[in-house]
Length: 104
Image (cartoon, rainbow, N blue to C red; front, side, top):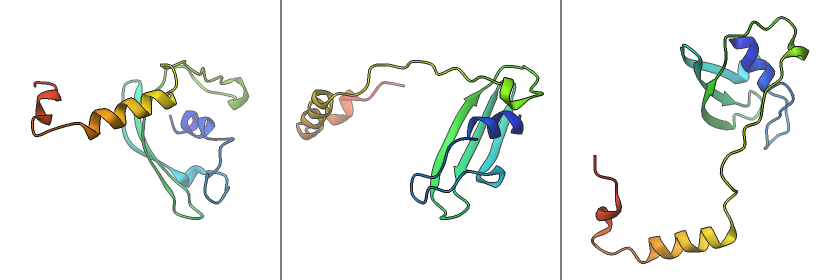
């Protein structure tokens, strides 16, 4: 599993100091069947990039060049109007704001 995760971050670098991520930058916090929880931190400047939940198939990785990661399309990007709408919604909340939270 560590090899798959290392391959995923192979060509990426820190957005702060531009150092490449190495094996020590990736800490596996938890592993389950098909799912890993990892923490990413730059070893040069200490910038923490948070936690990620990664799902992998059971394929055997022998050659890193043969491993292709598929980029899945998510929802449409957040638009300028979406940000303004969210701002207005939050700004206009009153003392009954808790009514908007999902009921558990």
